[in-house]
Image (cartoon, rainbow, N blue to C red):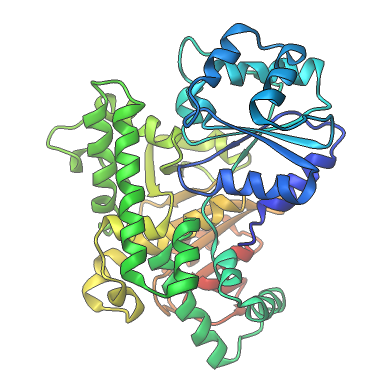
Length: 431
C-alpha cells in the first residue's frame, strides 16, 4: 500500500542535514513495514534489529555505544555488511533499549554517514523516564499516523476518483452527482475500516467487515496490554478509565472533555497523568479551546478546556461496538454519536496533514469545531455529519473575526459562497 510518508523518507535520505530518524506513532500504524519497504526500495541492503524479538541485543548496547564499536558488531549480528550511505540500519521496538536511543547522539556527531531509522510504538512514554538520556537535537523525529482517506482510496484502486476530487476542490466546482455519491460511500466505509494498515489491506482483499472488526479488537486489546505493561501500577486503572470513557464523551452534544463523566467527583489532578500517557503513546490526541483568535494560537489556548479524540476512526467504531451497516446505511439511531464520530475523523485527517488544531466557543453557544492555520491564515472549520446547509456558528464567528474565508465540511457537494468553502467530508484530506 502506498504511504505518503515515503516521500518524506526519500527527502530525509537525500538531505545534507540528515540525522538519525526517529519514526514514532501508535502501535500498528505501519512504522516497521514502511521502514523496511523504504530500505528495500532505496538502499542496497537493510540491517534490521528488533529489540522485542531479540532481547540479547540489549547486551550489545550495554557494553559500548560508540559507532566505531557498534558497526562491526551489528554487521555480524544481522549478517549484513553495513556500508556507509548504502545500508539502512533499522532499530525496531527501541523503547525496550534506552541505550540504543542514546547511541543516536554519537552516530549523529561521529558517524552521520550511516543512515539509521529508529521505530517504536511507545517512544513518547519512554522519553519521559527519569533515567533515560534522550539525544535532544541529534535526531530527526517524524510521527506516523494511520492511513488517511486518500491512502485508503488508493488502496482500493480509486486513483481516478481522487484526481477528480482534487480538481473539484481546487476549482470549487461540484462533483458529478453519481461520483459524489460513490465518494460518500467510500467515506462511510473508511469510518468503519479506519486507517490501520492491516485493516485496510484485509478490507481491500476481502471486503469483510466482520474480519476487520476482529483485527480492530485485537489492536484495542494490544493497547490495553500496553497500558499495563508500560505504565506505573497506580496509573493503570486511571488510564484505562479515561480511554474507555472517551467514546462516552464523544456521544455528547458538547464533546468537550469533562472529568465528571469519568466518575463521580473526578478532578483534573487525578487523571491528567493518565491523559498525558495516552497522548504520548499516540493512542489519543487533544485539541484545546482558543480564548482569543490571534496569532500565534498556541499563546491563547485554554489549558482547562479541551477535547480528546481516538487516533483512528475505525478503532473508535470498534470500541463503541457500532455495527458497520449502521454507518453504511446512515441509521438514525446513531444520531447522538454521529457528530463526535465525524469530528474524530476530521481531527485524524488534520493531524496527519500536520496541523495543530484548536476549537472555539462563544458565550452565545456558537462553536467552531476546528481552528487551524492554513497558508499563514487562521481558518475556521465547521463540521456537519450530514448534508446540513445551515452554518449558524460559522456566521457568528465570521461576523466577530472576519476571516478571509471559512471551510464547512459536510456531505454537501463542493462549492464556494459568501466566503465559505464547502468541502465534502471525503475531501478533508485536501485541507
